[in-house]
Length: 133
Image 1 (cartoon, rainbow, N blue to C red):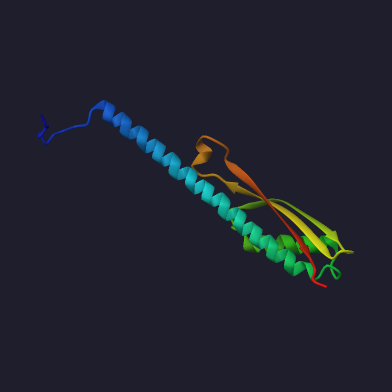
Image 2 (cartoon, rainbow, N blue to C red):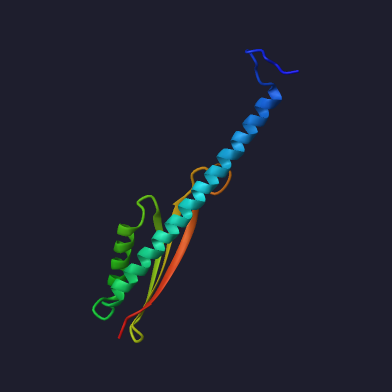
């Protein structure tokens, strides 16, 4: 019937199933953490680039293209996570239309999923802003 022995030890098969379940659980939690990190980095970068282009488009006539790009990069570095590296930043200025377009890519490092997949994910966002007349 039931084993009432206090020195019960799990069988080898039970230990293997427990180990398999633990590995799957760690993988699922790791994937969830890495996915959350990617989405958080994308949302943070999108918010930062939108705020920066809205602020900088006002000065489109008083700054050169290089100054606009430099100022945009500075704002993005201040507002994004220190662990995320901005790998590219492209700025396009249309002075006739008073339009500032920016694209930024950030590299988000993986934690758990890097054991079985890529060690990073590149996230790209863009912003297209017109100055109010």
